[in-house]
Image (cartoon, rainbow, N blue to C red; front, top):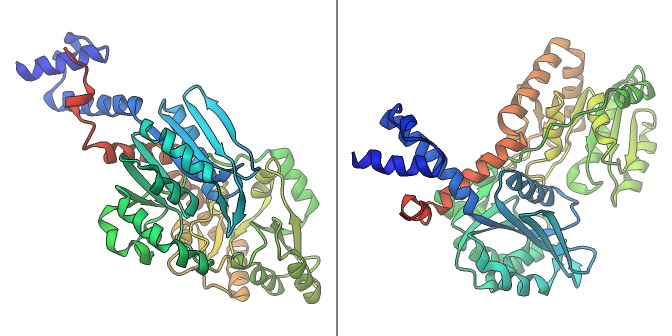
Length: 426
């Protein structure tokens, strides 16, 4: 009787009648209770995403913004504090319950925004939030949190180790070690990266993973047809990214030497290595097989994913921790050829012999062999195409990322949010 009295109070609060209650078993009542309690907790939690910069340019910033908007759609109060690459302070109202605070930046050094305003701003607003979700690597965000005096829960989103900038890592290490200790929960983008990071070896018991999720890319048939006409009679290999060393484009260009003239490799993106890569193309006489497209406009990208036969990720270093471009291609059912980067999540995202093929790094001939094997065996092509789409649906949809993120927040708050303090009095 006492149990039903408690459930009756709970049902009444959530708009359900006593007659409905009487029809449920104790197990069903408990299930209803847990689901509604989670919803109720989500309605009352307030989250701050902390890190990187605005406007959105890279993968980390995109994940932050997608979490912000996705949580907003679920009715969660979630704001974002970051540095403004355009220097001045800016406040953006994303929705009635979500804001982006872009702090004034003094300068950019080692890909890090130096923004004293982030420190003062966070000290001011931090007490309003139940959880601060800090995105790593970002020394400025870590410093702001360290100096904020914040006493609440911290989720540390470990997107990647600092791999290239050894001098920065040496300077940042004491602060990074503090951040790892301070975090209540550490979230990686793949289980592989979390397990392999030397900086997380001693805290595996408070680590989990949250795969990046996106809305499926939806190519417009007319634009896809236009691209196919432009490269009529060609098997199209597409790749997208900044033209920098760790992307391994020199090896993808080298791979074109082992392909025939009925292939064309399209590389979208700009960067410091453009002239060097174009020189390599010219030296090999590959002008008809490899095209450097430059920056591809956002509105044109879906057509390239839709028109290509294979997506190729030639990255060679652990700096490439996940590669969102892989799941963008997979959402279109495109097989992926990627490299087996030790310690990276890249080969976990693209499951070998399921959504595509994984080959050794820094080997153009191996890339070419994998591309030809997929394209020239139609049965295998359709198997990998179906596998790519299936893996996207199972792991990498944005809706899944938001649901899992909410579960993580509830897990972190479970010591402070429970039936005794979220139910109404009386």
